Image (cartoon, rainbow, N blue to C red; front, top):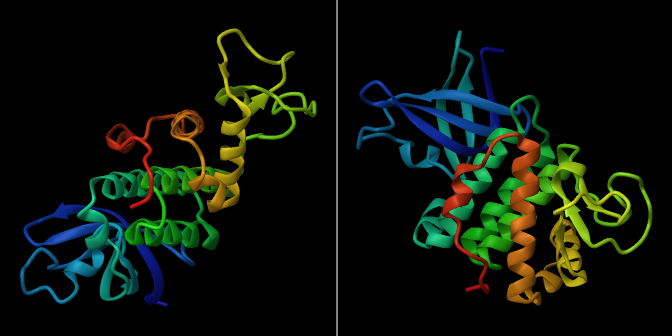
Length: 245
C-alpha cells in the first residue's frame, strides 16, 4: 500500500529546506520511522505542533522512495507543553527519546513504544521525580532490548546471594569471586531501589533516600551508556534526583 497509518512518538526533528522538517518517530507497529513533514515550519501549517518532540500522534504516511511523507497528523497526547516548562522534566524527556532512538536502530517492538509513551505521560503529569521516571524507563527499555541488568544472582557466574558490587561491563551485580579491582560497591537499599525501578514499583521508588536515589541513578547511567556503546548526550543536562512535584 502506498499509504499507511500508525501511532507514533516524535523523537526528534531536523530542518529540511525553507519550510519542511525531517521527523524521526518511534511507531507502534512499524518500528522507527523517518519522514518528511512538508510546510510545518510555516505559521499556517495545519499540523506543525503535532509533530514536535515528545508529542504522540496518529499519523497517515505516504511511502516515498527514500523518505516517507506525513500527510496527516492527529494528536493523541500533547505532552510537550507540560514537559517543556519544567527543566527537570524537559532534560529527562530528551534523555528518554535519545535512548529510544539508539535502542531501536534495528527493530522496535510495540512494548518499546508503549513504555516510552507511558514515561512521557508520567513526566508531563509530574507523577514522580523526573530523574526516577527516567531511570525506570532506561532500565525497562534496556530489558526489552535483551540487556536486563542482573540484580539477584551474580551476573557473571550465576552464584546466588546478596552481592554488593555492580559492574556495568559484566552485566550488573557480581559476587566477590567475580568482582574486579575498583568495582563500585552498592548497599542493599540501592539494590532494592534498582529492583523497584525495574519493576515500576513506585511506592518503593518514592520512599528511597536521596543517597540511594543518587547512587542508583549513577549506576543506571553507567550501565545504559556502556551497553549502547556511546554516551547519551542529554544525560549531562539531567537534574540531580529530587522529590516529586
